[in-house]
Amino acid sequence: MTFRPDQNPLGVLRVLQPAHALPQAALRLDPALPAYADEVVLDVQTLNIDAASFVQMEGVQAAGGPTVAQQITAIVRERGKMQNPVTGSGGMLLACVAQKGPQYTGPLAAAVGDRVATLVSLTLTPLVLHEIVEVVPSAHQVHVRATAILPSSAPAALVPDDLPPPLVLAVLDVCGAPAQVARLAVNLPQGGHVLCIGAGKAGTLALAAAREARPDLHLWAIDRFAQPLEEVHAAGLCDGYAALDASDALAVREQVLRWTDGQLCDAVVQMASLPNTEMAAILACKSRGVCLYFSMATSFAQVALGAEGVGADVDLLIGNGYLTGHAEMALQLVRRQDKTRALLAKRLGL
Figure (cartoon, rainbow, N blue to C red):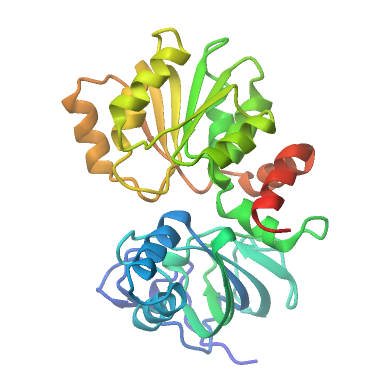
């Protein structure tokens, strides 16, 4: 087994363009083997594409453009990684460890042959795509034969044996969301109001985390489609819901005013996978409340300037995909909550 002797835990030796960029911001990465001495080589089985990116590519396909598979193939060939040039986002992956460099110093406690899920974005993961085997639109997952490189700085998790791998991958893809929402919920006032915009997998897990952390909170959900809202309500994850287009910020605000008897929400969690929903969160939030943006479709310029433009004195938080212990926290949440697990499994066709 041969490794290149050089090493850099941040993966900057893989950056081809531009100079001085870190891998996530790079336009092109070098995914070639052999690996450097501090890297892990992965045999990739599944790409979990983030919702904003997958929805955008589906739109291109529906308009008569290349298929989702063709778009992914072209992006990876051009960039050496999966980073949608429109949304700037990627996703994460499921793989088996193929090689582990002798100077690897990262957090991954896995041996060759172990199945792992990366906890960092595909936007910074060097990737060679050999074949797309199947695209699974309902799960935003793509089964592939591919090779990926993981630097020492990049966290990953062993895939547990007690949950189906597609479910594990879906949960770990958004595991920062429930962890951050649980942390946020602890500091909200007794009997406060929380709105979740988007009832996909991230929104479902966020509501589940808030419900478990603070049963006293009033939880509300908005999505474009009625079915996911009906599902999260039936699972006991929200107290009420409305099928609304969150790009209509005034309609969202009016609904929230009705729910809260004119108070607005103490916290709003923005999980929608479509653009132009930034102001809905701000207008639904009371003064000195908190807006947490966890969607990769978010324009943070619109968030900051929009809040300023309407005189909204709210705390604006960027959802961080990494929190200490977030992977295990999300998996344990799914293990404890039978209805949440069943709902996610149903959506994944399991």
